[in-house]
Each structure stands twice: as structure tokens, then as C-alpha cells.
Length: 110
Length: 116
Image (cartoon, rainbow over all chains, first blue to last red):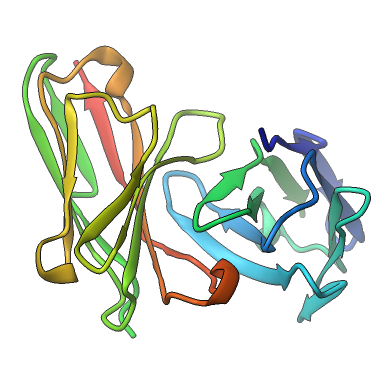
């Protein structure tokens, strides 16, 4: 059974810091991995999708890497801003459904 | 592309009542998913449609839950005889059908259900 773990559960950093969020999964047979952002009381906003054949994806200040063999993904956020404060979720797809981690709650202090 | 739309945004009801939620997917998406998210947890898969066919139901979906997607467009999720444990955010997502499920899922803003 696939299990997804995210570390740390919560993170508070001063504005401008570069930071790394971690995601690990127990079964490497995945189709893709997606990182999402969730603001309080809101739905999920897709940030980056990495196919199983890819190693990384970049969008603006965000970079996500995938190491399928070790069951790990990282989301790198450069030059963090207060507007980045949210919960970040990673999800892996083995078939048509996603298995989610419990998220990392990020707070960026001005 | 107007995104995935869910209605209502919030629903407060008494225990034992029936509730129904609606999801309108992105128009060209033929796959539609329902997830449930409780406080402090990640979303959990409930059920999935390809066009009008419901292809899988999670064990989380008890007999009190039913989902439909008539004509392969919008979907409804009904909960009968609601219980306190049904309080959660119900999220809908849609995607195109792709090889090996490599298409991203796009999520709506969810319906927050509170059972009194």
C-alpha cells in the first residue's frame, strides 16, 4: 500500500530565505508526482507535475525534483515571500487516483 | 477554461439529514474525481468517473454515499443520514484521460460540510 510522508509538518522562515520541502513515498511504481498549494479553506492549486520519466520541473521560483528509485521528491522555493505562506501537499499517482501526504504548513514572516 | 466549480461552498446541516453536492468539471475533461479532506490531513480518494461510468469506489464510501455523473458532464455526491464523522471538505477534480494517468488533476475549491 502506497504511503506518502511529508517533512517537516510545519515550517516558519523569515522572508527571503530559500527553503526545501520533502516528500517521500513507499512504492516507486508511480506514474507521476504533483505538488499542490492549499490556502486555508480553499481547494488545491497545482504547482508542478513531474512525470515518472522526469527528474525535475521548474516554474518561476519553484523547482521540484523526483528520485523514483529512492522514493523521494523535494520542492525548492527560492527567495521566499509572505505570499508563499500556505500548506504544500505532494501527491503520487499509481493509477488514476492520487495518494496525498499530510502536507507542510509554511509560514513566511515579513 | 473556467476551472472546476463546486456548489455549495459551505453546507451546515443537522445529523441525520441528507445533503447533495454538485461539481462542474472543466468542459473538455472526461475524468472526474471526488476526494474528502479532514482537518490537518491530505485529501483521500472517494470515487472516480470516466465519462458517465463510475469506475471505482473507495472503501471510505459507505452505503450512505452515492455519486452520479449523468451524461458525463457535471457530477453529484449525495450523503444520506449524515453523521458527525462526515464533517469534512469534499473536493472535486477533473482531468483529461491520458496514457498511464499522466494528465494533471485540476481541483475545485471544495464544499465544506459541517454536521451539527
